[in-house]
Each structure stands twice: as C-alpha cells, then as structure tokens.
Image (cartoon, rainbow, N blue to C red; front, top):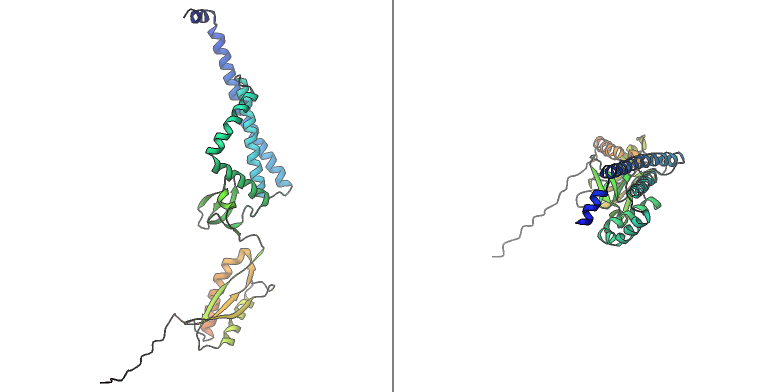
Length: 277
C-alpha cells in the first residue's frame, strides 16, 4: 500500500492521460491512413493489371490480397505505437497460427483452392459454369469463395475447395456451342422428306453456323416414334434463342409438310380364346 501511495503521489496523471490519449489518437490515425492506402493500393494494382490485359478474376484476387497486406502492415505499425514490438507481435502470431490453422482448416483449404483457381483459371469473370454443384455466371473469385449469379438472378457463394475438388464445366470457354435436340416423327411418315424439312429449317436460320455444318440423322426407333438427332452449331451467345427458335420452326414446318409428331402410344392386341367346354 505504501508503494502504491508513493506511486500515486509521484505520478503526474495529467501528463499520463495526455500521453495515452496522444498514442491512441496516433494509433487511430495510422489505422485510418493505412486503410486509405490499402484501398488506393488495390485500385492502382487493379488498374495496372487491367491495362496489361490480365484476366479479370486474377485482377480481383490480387487486388484483394494487396488490400489485406497493406491493412496488416498498418495494424502492426499502429500496435507498435502502443509499445507492442512488431517482432513480439509476429512471434505471438506465429505461435497462434498452428492453433488457428487447425481450427480453420476448411477456410485455409478454401484459400488454397482460391489460389489454384486464380493460377490455373478454369474460368473467368462472365463465364457460365457448373461448379461445386451450382450453375451460374462467375461474378467474382474471393479468397475463400466464388460468387455465382444464377440465370434467375440469385447470388450463390460456393466454397473454393468445393469447386476445385469437383468437376468444373465451363459453357463459355469456347466461342461456339452445339445445340443437341431430338425430334420424333410417326412411323408412317416419309423419313427422307422429314430429313429435308428439318435441314431446310436449319439452313435457312441466320444464326446457325455453316461451319461446322448442321447434322441430322435417325438415331432411334422408339416405342411411338422414329427419333431424329438434330445438331446445329451456333455462337455461344445464341445457344438458348436458337434452341427455342429451331424447335418452333421445325414444328411448324413439319405440320405444313403433313408430317406428324406422335404422342406416346401403345398398341394393345386382343385375342379371342375359344371356349373348350
């Protein structure tokens, strides 16, 4: 108690509070300036990468990494003003990394998968993909997840590890796509005439490519119909419009040619059994 009394008597609390207040204000200023510099660094890096034609996914990813790195440096500088030496802080962080790593192993796995996605680039921003069990347009690849926008405008966040460890189907990787359709006609209809009608529809369509040429052939003798496989090639942006338009035009053309598209049906045969009595 005597030592405490002596300390209180000898301490200039006004100067102490001013010193503490000054340090806290300085810490706050360092952090605010650091966050501002982090955003500037992100924008400058992204602008430079875009100017050099770097892939948009890589631009977003590296911009985020730069933001985080500058922010961490600002936090270390701010803590240094409170008397916490950077070396001591790094030692504590290093010692805690193992425990944090074990607790957040899934997050670290997602981060590692995000790095792999950025390096190998199986897709880029704006591509329509099936990945991680979800379908949608790639909007952004973050440190731990990928943001997809579905055709009905829903936003889906898919963990990067889930994407990297599964199959990835990129529908936008090539400039052209093949439209696969099956059209069935009746068994009593003229197959040669059916072929000519369908090919006529394909050849007259202005969005169907001439090279590769569209293909039509009989693929199956079904229970109720003779099935034709119809395979035109289109630009990837025209896939769905051509798919719907060709089906409609083909139905109209077959009706005009007197060729039927049968409903599912079955033939039932009755046999009269004579009475043996």
